[in-house]
Image (cartoon, rainbow, N blue to C red; front, side, top):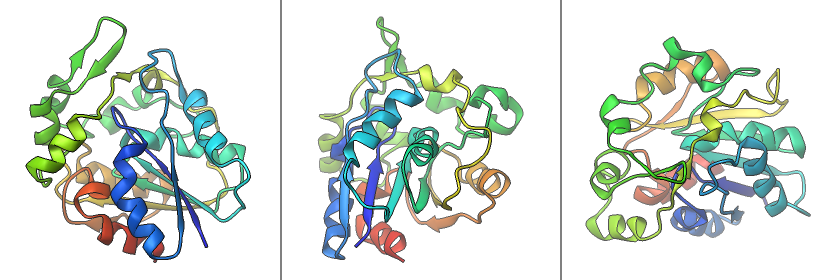
Length: 228
């Protein structure tokens, strides 16, 4: 039995993995998810990784860590701190060892469409929020209205400290790697994902149909890919 540690992206929480967790459990595996401290504007990668490692306390070494979106910055730090068999980047950002995302402006210029960033709203406490229209257009375009309502009722504020942080590792942790992208992803552009997965992780991305949120829009298909 493999334990899948499911690490959410910006604005989300453990709740977003519920459909996928059910599918993984149907296939005889264990799924664990956690809430990251995303509402704290000062929380950085170390704080996020702490939340994941605490959740995995007592779990054996057969762990696959799946990081969605912004969680691509956290999962290699988890792999530095405890045994992990594989890291899976799901529609995720990739931060080069020893650098911040901002340190590679040319490579990351085409990562996300400008309209996506323009649709995010800043808050007085140093966090930001994503309005319904922006979320529906860029994260959830293949979800039903009911699924969008379910998600919007649970979205949280997101701090931005991670973006400017330098990766606290100078080489990649010694694990297996995979990258899974959504061909219709409007938040993390597929052309960027294909190029950077090869350039930074040395892998050819696995491609699913659909949006930035396959854990909700196509959980059975995603579970099949993960368990293969």
